Image (cartoon, rainbow, N blue to C red; front, side, top):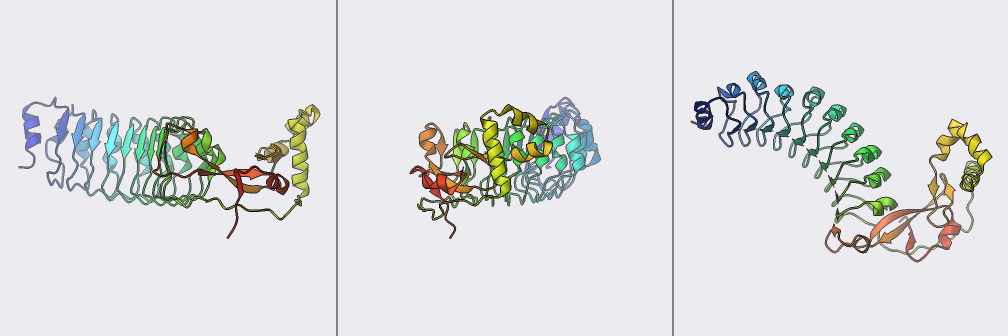
Length: 350
């Protein structure tokens, strides 16, 4: 009988805390399971389960539940009653989405493994899993992640490899405790500047995407591992600029003048700006020229600088045979471009 581990546990009394019923060809939960109210760890992986029965709700002390490699098509709603649940494994099923109600009922969850399913999106309510420390969604069909996910203040690991992501939300910088971010084998073309503000990030895996250039501030991250092989990274091809003068808009000329005055501590102008919300909003979008240090708004030249990350971060693990990393540099004018140093290159459009 496939239920013999359960029978043995029942004979030993209802104080059993751990039970494993793996690879038993179970289509349904065995009778008597609900009586084991002291159960804290239940392993039901490698079966043929597609639903849970209501009596599952009796396992109020359950902390670890493994439902991996079954045939669930949705996250079972009975899980919302398992208030003590800390680790939930649902890998290797056929789940396409998660009900928003699930997020509200699993607030003690610290690990959620949803690898190898059919998720195409996540509900914005995922931010309700406020104690989550590890979220894994490798090998799914995600095309985006909701910005609300970036509100998970305790999240330390985020695994999103082998999906269809094309971009990351700028709000990702709010994941202040995130240490491991794996994004390999997606369709990401550009990284948000906010990624470079993640002070706790130590492992970044971007292999097999469509990234050509990195934000300049990528050098500020205290990474111990960086993987970016399989991306169409820019190569060194020197470009000469023909233009000698830039034709700026009136708005750009005005903005550059104001930014220069503010940099030189023009107090009267500073007081005037503080009283004008619209002007503050416009000037907050300023960039800084990597050559002369002057501020500007929308008129700029995109260049690339090649940084040998192995030399900068000598103890960092990287991809094999990793070439210097191309990082994005902005210049305010062709004048600055024409007097740039040898380590700076223009980006030619084929």
